[in-house]
Image 1 (cartoon, one colour):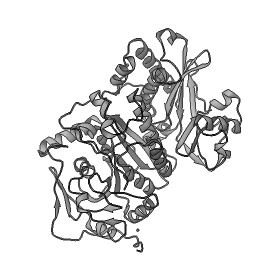
Image 2 (cartoon, one colour):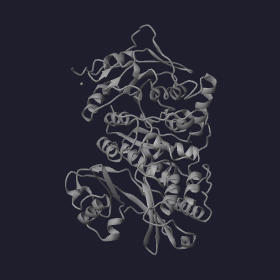
Image 3 (cartoon, helix red, strand yellow):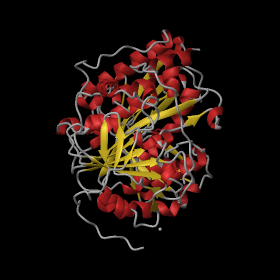
Image 4 (tube, helix red, strand yellow):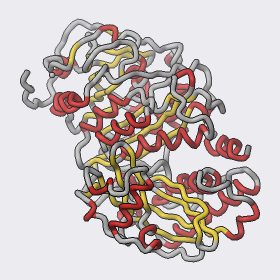
Length: 536
């Protein structure tokens, strides 16, 4: 099948380190006066009590030099020429064996370079013990083949004064979701202390209480890490919401969760998980993280793939993603890579537009004619920082002005040029409203690209300006989106647009009038033969 061959080719990663057995995970999510905020104190000296490695020799190598080399190889493969200058506030990082999720994790931990971090708070889900709240181990150090990591016992003891924090020994003995993060940290940070928090079942009204307990310890030199894999699909995980187009459906399912995480949408994320049944094993970690994120941070998806992309077997597949949250400086957009002022501008110049259109056209031609993906050198001079930045982008195909396909992503999912390639493929082969594009249609197709600004939450429908904004409607765990050009092209006013948008979301036509959430964004839209800057 053309779809399978094309998508296997596009998703092929640069490593085949399949030396360990996949150990996948799943779990269900599992209140005294708040102490005053305190400054960091020197660690309390007490006899060493080591939590030994439970993963060495299975989830990652037991020999120190081999483990060091494996981690360094992942970090090298995931390296990028430039990194944002903003302070890294938090990461979402996967926790499977390194042969599977090591590369995705490396994309996040590479971002620690140049960061001043002295303390790491890890939020990890429990896979082995049923309990409520948060467990902190009765230990002074975690140990891996790369050495011992000291636990910040001052903070640990303060947190244990809260009703939702306790020590559940069995929650730590074999737990992989926390330990798997440590060798990456040991190879990217020189010295740091650890606050290991393993979460059990957490009720909706308890996330804020847990976050309030942790917030006083978020010093400028503290990093938060939420440990989680994404969808666990297949009979092995008792989750099979679809039976065809596995790769595309997994990407769509995970993408919906990632969009809500990147938007820092706590309630939307949990509602999405509930409505889809998505088996995101560390959702309690992510939800807690979302409660801890301040307003001045912005998220960026660094890398995403599935175990099926590595093995070619999607009948049982686990998804992995790496997400970073940066503190946003006034006038800067962290998702654009922290380059100089011109490269931070959301607008692409004419040359960049033409380059992106050429990439999209070449991808379309090769995937339809030859079932291959064009090779592109990352050293190409046309790849400006803006084309390497993470941006939302849609690729639209039209024949004689009529829609022939349109697929994209609202939030950035990797470099803009790669997202454009992926969406050129998806719009030509995976838009379920149409048959795959044929070779005979190629000459008639005109391509249009919409590069998006990050969505912003508005107080109500009056914040949506027809002709300027794209609009996202969210309600009851579902959502739908229209690009900025849709309403003007159809001649719709605001009310008509929102009525159609509610229908697109599968909601009653007037559902937007009560208890709905609205997000707006702008788009730079350009098409073949008309590569000039325009904001619709």
